[in-house]
Length: 201
Ligand code: GTP
Ligand code: MG
Image (cartoon, rainbow, N blue to C red; front, side, top):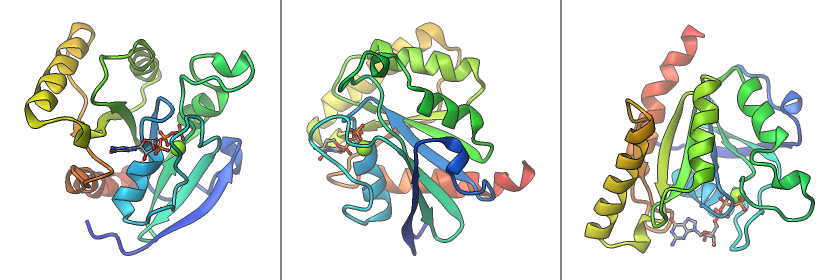
């Protein structure tokens, strides 16, 4: 898919302020600092469109971006990082849960996972929560540039083995790097193939 335009639309604290759900939408979620905002910028090739930071907890709101005038990308706050209060330390904030369960045009949620890490309990709990809520999701591994080819393959295989302990089938899996744009075409092709399914809603 060719990205012709990418514009910021609105930031919201609650799902009710989000744009009218008339277009297909894809959101990015995952632990704080995993690279959600960076991946969005890499996909659309606009540095700084989604705000990134080396410190976790940067994205705090639901951020909508309109792509090619006909679909939305959404940057969500991360989970698994407590900045201030105990309330924030709950697994998944209400803002995340309400967005995911309330957004009728959400075609797919990309759950980002740092390829270098062992499977994290909080991510596995998130997969379980989504499955029990019937949310369609994919896994997008991030920061692939930080590993060599052999290491990358063995991390990927180990992660799949871990998932298959709990799941009969694996979700779609993407491997990406915001630094090198690795995986960009695969992810955008997947969105392009999924967009036409929106009409059936
Ligand atoms: P929150 O909004 O805080 O939840 O974080 P986030 O998931 O949006 O992460 P963000 O995109 O802000 O990136 C966090 C840090 O990781 C930044 O320092 C990025 O430069 C770095 N980073 C993100 N993606 C990659 C990647 O693919 N490769 C490398 N080497 N660094 C990355
Ligand atoms: Mg962010």
